[in-house]
Length: 228
Image 1: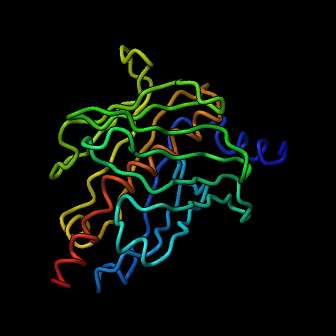
Image 2: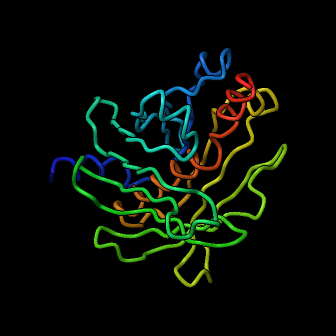
Image 3: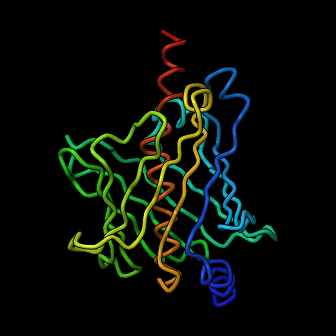
């Protein structure tokens, strides 16, 4: 375990920004079939820091769509898995407040270091960042409309009382073609340089939960449009 944490600290301790680039899958573009997502994570200098790959089966992706369960394996540049994100099958609607989205962040795999829990709200996407003891640490608050044309969509990382903003998760506009025909998204993360490395990792996990829950439904809808 100390080896994994030293790798994580080495990768995140001197980082206050991360860029998450989802790879475009040809099968999604041509057929509308949702594939296992893959991501390249870079620092503010454009240097690759991590590579992330989703693990889920075809039926789960096609039937459950953006609320599907999955494991996301995050590797460093040497191919060593330093984090695993575990997301169970949950609802994403405010109509089911007892079964909202959640995600567990593990480092090393099998050792929880934090959690992302969706908070019920009738209008806004809200999430709570928890530490390994499931104690609330931070809040994430998104906009009322999280689908904007030609502009970024920002989810603010805030203090527990929501009085101050300490970071941001931004869904970056990728252009008309990319937005219309793929679900490949670009996200930017900002957080304080001196923030606990474990909490940085959990905020990264929150980014992937937002990606999968709120921005992976287009291909899913298109697939069923073709069928019916």
